[in-house]
Image (cartoon, rainbow, N blue to C red; front, side, top):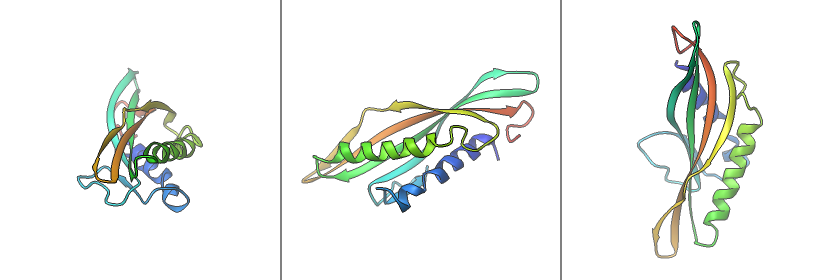
Length: 144
């Protein structure tokens, strides 16, 4: 498996405590189906660009998105999303190398502008929190 795929899987696995101890009802990897249960977190792979190329290795900058989806009344959407955002940060930064020998660092890139939608007394909010993961692969095989 490409190391970028392993990183996304590791981040997905690291967020599972959000289901057990936290405020979310669903944590999933990128799929064509949006989560039915809210609040939810979706882990999505973003751009993956080479940072530097050596004779034996490539250093990469991978962006991983954690999309937070909430559905609540208008007075608690921000608070609920910020609580989830905080817990994601704590879980991911507990191991800044994600316990993967080839990961050099993970850095928060911030949050996107929230998107609000809805009618009646129920509204939804979607916000993207992005992470930069610096990692290294063999120049000959990105799975090594």
